[in-house]
Length: 291
Ligand code: MG
Image (cartoon, rainbow, N blue to C red):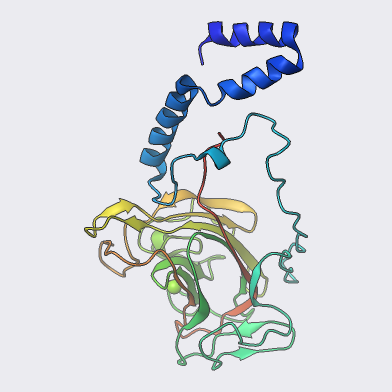
């Protein structure tokens, strides 16, 4: 909308009051505004690339400060975990692990779990995968290396959390531990080291909050938009909307191959007795335009 047109509308407000407001509301749907919205949307889709980001429809277009716009749903937040005690999940989360859940959310029960909701890798029994499938989501997970564990590079203190069963954020005893940086705790394994290393010592709980976006593919199998992850590690950003270069691999460059935008959350049995607690997921809707 041009400045001149805006001034005209303000003047109309002053002289017409309520009828001016109604006139402005009508202008939101003018061809000029529709063109502007279309241009913003085109840039947005080029940036985000999500096929779910449909063109704004009449029902999704709201004037600024429109009280008819749906209110955000009230959510009761969980308790934040500490180095000595895991936290709790918010009210709208899908809880994968917590007090009393046992291994119900997972595809096998060969790992050990207590009534307190602390689960531990039982070495050699295999990774666990969530029974449910998730796509774009916020995932919270708390993990601890045993206090007496010797961490030596990738050995002794290793696990990982995978999205869609394919994309790993590394879990590793990293306080302190010298290893290849793209294998440290908080790394997008074999792709990006964490920006910094806020890992707590063995015997203390660490936590990740990860905002994950699934990659999208075109009909012909080519990549439409890559997967991304923002990782907050003990309250510190260590991945800032980092782009997955492909499915996690070891010792080779990652590549993409078309797959579903949803899949299982997987925790790695790397042969080490890593403990987990307070694991929950909140599926996220695709990003949308404001108006
Ligand atoms: Mg790992």
